[in-house]
Length: 347
Image (cartoon, rainbow, N blue to C red; front, side, top):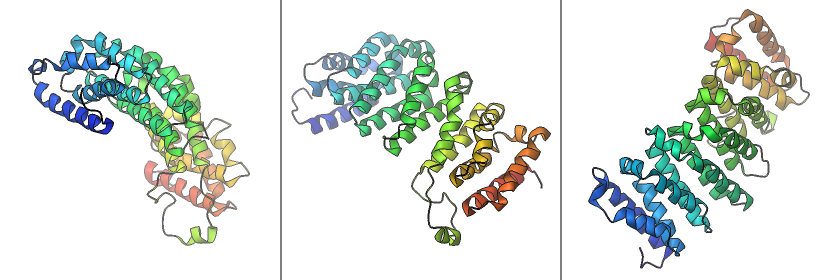
């Protein structure tokens, strides 16, 4: 790798080296004693290609040498942090991947993971920089790495969770960004909610924004030719391509099940959300409100079955059976079906 001049070839060599090293060093990190000195020296090389290669190897090797990394966590933290602030984007992204792999590899070592928590703002800085450069492909790479960490070690973000939520919401609501990028920001928030519900229940910013965000996503529904829609035998979301309304529905379902029905019910039926949407002159709002009732029904079953709420909800839904727009009527029938079959409510 030190002598290779072709960037693509060197990346493939780094991948291969990392995989081979993980096999050799899995049982005993000392079986390849030259590896760690090579990694640390290469990470400080004036050659950006070697710096990138060092982080690629680390990302492949981390799981196999997790115990070894616990002994050198400060040095590894410094290596990753320096790499994520490198002048070259390729090095920053490779260091980000290495950081994610190390944190996930150490997920069962709470003290060591906590020691690396100072890198969270650096990771967010990498994301902000790619967004500012309008490099959405790299932005998605960062978001995917954040999601991977959230799945394996969500408590890693505990100290910086507010800043991460704020950044995720900014990305998720940025209309100038591509949908794929915004959807990944939503997925990050939902993954954190599922993997660390007690932590996320305490986050006011998350709670106040997740249901409105989902409802806004659901307003982006295609206004198709009604004669064609009315004759189709397919459901609204039978398509293979992930759409904004799919993401919004999924968000409501998952957050109700993870955060809890009591919290989500109160959020959804806030005066300016479902009740207001049901009376909105734009059919897309009424459609979104009814879809919301369908999606949170399972997670909010206990709250919806309460006598104080049930009659109101049923009346709100059935009132839309005669809506002027056929897609709203369909959404009302679907919502009632969810209430009747999923919650054993008979009207």
